[in-house]
Image (cartoon, helix red, strand yellow):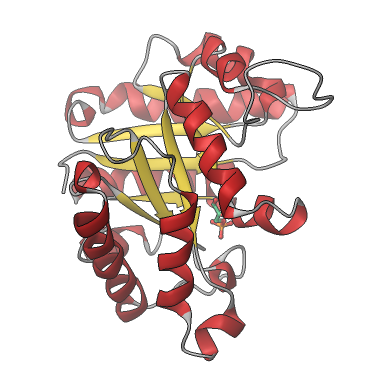
Length: 256
Ligand code: 13P
């Protein structure tokens, strides 16, 4: 597993200019203070709504705080009203893009095939794709969690993944997202070890890539989560909107 731990904050559809600037400057002051320890050890990526990218980029471009998009279109340009392309995100300072988040899969009916194409667009634009997978509570109860996650990985991987290592997997069990119900150590380790096996077998280029956990990660449980096997980082929703909480998570990554 790569040494660098990843802490990714997904703001989802939250943030207006003023509160976002405050949020970023609070997070930045922590990051500036810990600059030396962070180098080579922890990468922090914030994925704000697209409307905030240029402002956040201006504030963060000289610091160890990276930017990511929350989604992108499969095409680089064209008649796709309301959509945003990977190149546009790149131009606004993004180095990675989340694709296939369960909220996109659910509210926008995104299929594995579409997500694979989005991942390809992210790679084509020169960025890292953060591909999200995860089962519903119902699927887990039916004993299908691994089967569902394996199928999502196999079908939503960009087609250049066989030789490119710019893909990260985020395991986010849907029942743990925004519910305050974090997955247990057993749940997380079992799935992360399983995902690692799948990657090693099917995508050797990704054998070492970080596998992120997402779902009710907080300042209080992050240190514990980082100790689990094959957890290379976290994808944080709600807590990424609260700088003191988010900084505790970064601190946990620094100590991991
Ligand atoms: P929460 O951290 O709010 O559970 O959200 C997780 C998530 O969906 C991050 O992408």
